[in-house]
Image (cartoon, rainbow, N blue to C red):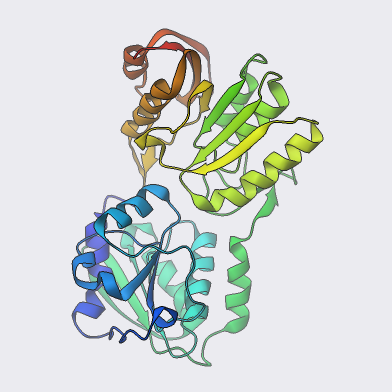
Length: 354
């Protein structure tokens, strides 16, 4: 989310419900629950928690919803009388989410969406209007909320089908990889990850973890380059990465005739790791929204240090300006900069401190 506070976005999203412009449907069992797509926890939970089935694929946000008492579900009914959503910034992913919401509410339901003005609210709401017809709207906290009329035959079913397909896993980089919109560097090989892959030691292993695995690029490079790997775990907070990551990994294992025990773990790395490793590699996230947030990278370093064996090694790549060295020095006895190039740095950290 941008500099606009998430609580402000939520307050604006629920504004038409609070003011009675959109009616909360009477519950008639789980098959007709209201649905909140890409749900975030907040003050709304105290008032409306029992009315909504919440869907969230980003693990830290999903965990926060559960801790707040919201009802988090993996699967929702294909029809709903009311669908709320917070569109993501990536337009293809947002259009697919709008299509999903409109299809769910197509039988007389209502879709309500909210986005900060500086994250594309105008274009997002124009997209929703293309699918569902004329919208009503309101503004608050530098955010825009819009809602449909009860949906009927005015829905553009053909466009909804076209946009729904935008979320599908697809080949990128001239067919070299599978990915999907909304993942980190979803439509390309990230330059920092490529630099780290170039400097992976062939002796890495035998138990290795990739923290923040995305669509699996680094994990696949480990399979290709590191002969000593026997166990490879992919940690990723975004559940939507599982399908392309597993497809890429299976293809790479087969092409390289490797028998490696692999696992994709939907997990918030900042809360620590459940297993121990001989080596960890990572291109850690360093921002939420648009602002740099070095604390995320530092939390990845802490989690890696705690999960490594005494002889273990962390290989990390980051933008050159990010201040990770103090945290690395505090948690490891031996550090060296492997390479600095094109604005990135690869750091090797050995012998984790307790």
